[in-house]
Length: 347
Ligand code: 2P0
Image (cartoon, rainbow, N blue to C red; front, side):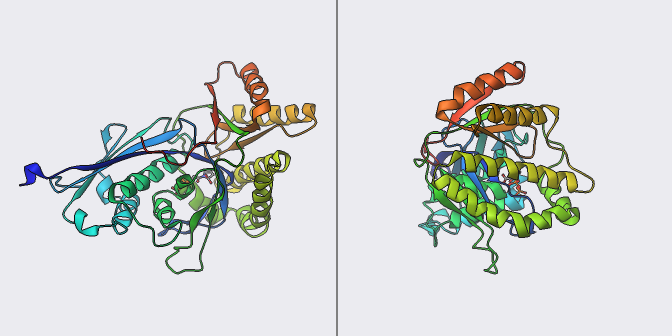
C-alpha cells in the first residue's frame, strides 16, 4: 500500500569555505575538474551554511528540489543535481532499499546566494552529505564523496571536510576519480585563526564562475603561467605555513593569490571585474594596517564577487573588526566567524 510507504529523511548542514589558493579554470568540463590545485579554510562554525533535508519514498512520484522554499522545476534533469544524487545512491549500503524510491530535497542558504560567498560550495556539499546520511553511503576510497560534490560545484568538494582542505586536481585516472578533496589539517589544528566577512554587496554577481572560467581559459595567457609556474609552489608554501601556524607566510600567500586570481580576471578578454572600489579600499587599508603593525596581522581574499574575507588571529580580531567598522560604518555587517568546530554537523 503506497499510502503507508515510509518516508526516510536526513538533515545536515554544511558550511562554506574560502579559498586561499583559488580554483579558476576547468580542465574537463564534463567531470568538472580544475586546471590547478586549490586549498581553502572551511568556516565550520560560521552561519554561512546550507541546511539540507533529503527524503526518499516509494510514494513520491518524481524527484524534486526546493531552494529556499521555492521549487526548482529544472533540477531533476540538471546534470549537477543528478551527478550528486545518483552518485550517492550508487554508494548506498543497502541499494535494494532505495529501488523504486524518488528523492525530495529541500535546501536553505543562510546567506546571500551568488554574491561570491561560495553558496554553491555549501549547497552541493550539503546535498551530498544529506544524501549520504540518508542512504548510509559507503565510500570505496577516501574522498569519493568529494568527487561527487565536485561534480555539483567544484569548490563544494572542499566543504566536506573541516580545517584546511586541498582539492587535488587529479588527471592520472581516466574517470578523474583522483580529482578530490584532501584534509591538510583538521579543524582543531589552528583555533586562533579567524575569518571576518565584510559584506560589500549582496547583489547577484554578473559573471557566473562557470562562464568566467571558460572565458579565462580561452583568453588569458596569465592563467597558463599561473597554472604552470605559480600555483604548484604556492600550494607547498601555504600547506607548510598552515601546518606551522605561520600567519605571516599564510597571510602573504593568501593575499598574493587573491591578487593573481583577480589579475587573471582582468587579463581575460573581455575582462571580468569582481572587485569594486570598496574592495580595493579594503586592500589598501589592510596593507596600511600591516605596515603600521610591522607584521602581517590581517590578510584579505576576494572570490568571484566584491565581498572581502579577512583572515586574522584571535588576538587581533577586535582591532581588525574596529578598523573595518571605522572605515565602513555603513557597509553591511562585519561578521566574525571562528573556524574550529566540527565538520558537517547533523542537525
Ligand atoms: C574557489 N571560486 O577556489 C574559487 C575562487 C571563485 C573564486 O570556486 O563551475 O562555484 O560550480 O565548479 O566552484 C567558484 O567556482 O564553480 C570558485 P563551478 P565554483 O573557491
